[in-house]
Length: 618
Image (tube, rainbow, N blue to C red; front, side, top):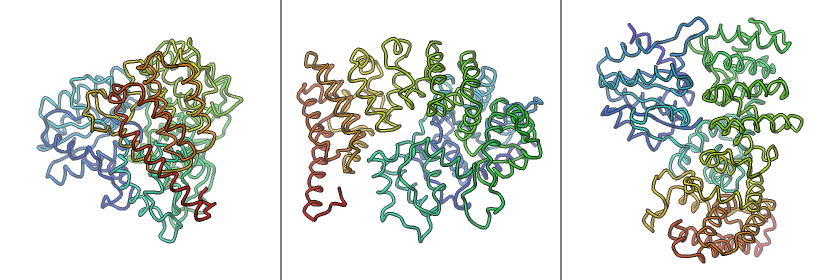
């Protein structure tokens, strides 16, 4: 009996995930880790823990795994961790006992547990998940669960085999995804580039599209769906994409077609915020519709909005039609957890920074392990940080979070600071409270945002060498410089002819020769000169490390822009001049050769355009 009921719920969840081109799965892009994960799951040696960031495709991976397991004659059961969360009445959609009874009583059963991170925010819920996996492992029932990285750290290290699901790989997954999305969303008569894959990869190389938009399965799909039936405009960052989603799906419905009601054009932004705040208060992103509507009405009343249950139910239905909400088995959730976090943050920000932030910051300080609330607070600070009037309150909030001395509150402040460098000052005292992993997160977040902000902050670091050695001399130095390198081995242990995944990505990017924005070229050049003046040549090894750090930003952001070729070549020459050991340690030789070749290609291309009178090329 338990199996039949849970199997019906599982099928509904699978149907919700399958939002692509029909039921043949043509919308899905097979992931590089998938074959190995399927093999280990079938073998059933130990629980498989898939660790991936928000929007990296964990749920769709389980959808595909479910289909592959069924094709082998097995009986996978896809379960959402939200089913284990009790409602206001204390009733759960499913209990761990019911799940154990269902899968242990079914030969060939396999448990696929999605979004386990939602149950890892409290000690009791975390123990429930651990006990569930442990019991099934003892009875030889294969288990695959997904979690975000930070929450996954709370799981026992010996609980199972951890495998990382990253963003789309640039050489295999990304081109396949772009081709599939172009077929699905772009009309045949739409104006689009001759080669969509090359167009998007070039936008990535130019810095017009940030990495997260290009390589996140969730965000790349969102980019195409919001632009349909036209080819996307390739000038967006993550915040810009979320704001576009807000304006084209929530403020109004910009979709077209026979299935879109003409009268369904109301601005539902207030209701979306109320519903998300209600979910936050309930402690779950997927509550029963009755419960969330009742709580959202209370939230609306506190904001002097006369939205009763009837109005909010109508808005829930409208948001579901627009694809903002997913409503299944009388439960409602946003299309993705990140959209819930964004909607809750928009709703909280609309209440005003001075009234809302002190209460939110106090909540984070009191419950520093509550990642569910913390993610919303982080997004709220990012949204309010763009408001000059709210900036003093945001600055005070970030300072309060840093003064707690606690890891997660500090990381929230550092992320907000990375988005809005003006809210905090770069001081030694401020960095004293920041641990190495938080500094790493800050440094790796910067290049994923705006190029100009990154260049300006690089210049600031260049003038503060009392802080820079802290960033370049920590035990996490190699991770800071190579955030996309999944290898655990330091560079000096690699064979000389090997390039890391990250370095290969740089080499490929160098061949997308594009002119860079003048302000970025100027700011990066200033940072380079400041470091050269301050560092001198007293410590070859230390200087080599600093120069390598700056060369990373140069390679990553400038991509061999022709007008920057002279300082770029000088930078590479300086690195090579400071000892073969440094060059070998960081494996720079092939990068340098690729840079020189790309710069020469840029010069040749410019001369060719000039020779043909091609002023448009400039």
